[in-house]
Image 1 (cartoon, rainbow, N blue to C red):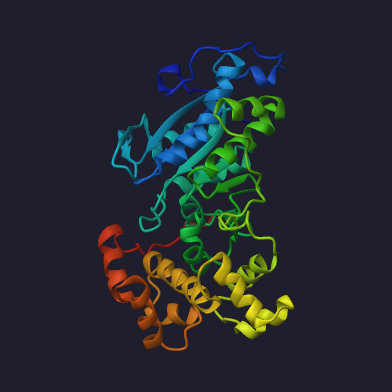
Image 2 (spheres, helix red, strand yellow):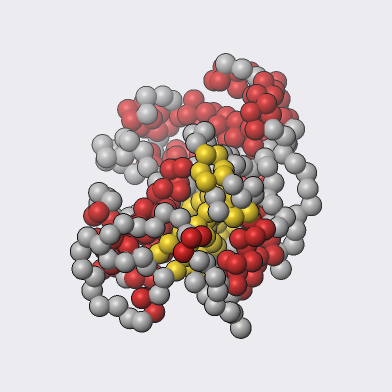
Length: 367
């Protein structure tokens, strides 16, 4: 049985302001104050954090009371520095906060906020407490690259999840258990994940709607000067500036085929056959809307994926070349240098200097 304790008022940070409008009548359950426990990791995204908490702040203002409060924890328990170099004060260490989060009937959710922390490794003290949260139906939310940390703990086995598109390739190569997708956010088995940045706003609105209904979330979006929140079907890489001017779906279909077949590239003739158009028509579409040829665009897609893998994994360069559809390391290096102005090895060295070498550590079972 869960005991009721404990988040005292002086432990709570960033409470919402005074009421702006009167709130509709609420059920008894909706009158309870709930805590959003936020775990901050080194270099976390301030945009992800503020985008996620803003809807809850506006919900408080609409309801005219502190329906949601939030508190911050970090490994040090003193502060954590975001990717902009600003330090965010924190009230707890992970080791102190997690037992309270898992046992408190007032915990609304536990939110992990990260950005570029995939080289740091997941704190061992989080695994057991997060497992207990999920068992007690306390949602666990991962913003941005925090999804990587959950995967390291073994929390995402057979679980649908997403991560920022810059880490998608490396994530898919590193972990076999999670069912990773490129949508902006997902929810599966009590674990929510999103791509981070502005998609954190969309996820927060979706969670609010589950708790308080559409009536309130429409007003929340309006107060945040948003036309509305995107649903979970939106892809991170599915929007193109040329799309509003393109009257043919063939270009979208061609790009989808290319993105799907990076390790074993299709010939342009094969792509044209699948789309039931001529190769010349295919070339004309790319020239008209993208200003390049299908071949150059396809090569860039594969090189972009390779660059992601080089920066975010320790896989050998030659293995990355093969995984991205290049028949030889020499040809790969030549194409890479032409596009980025440096060799794959130089990119890896620079990445190691910036974020450090990924620590090899045994993953804690999450079962």
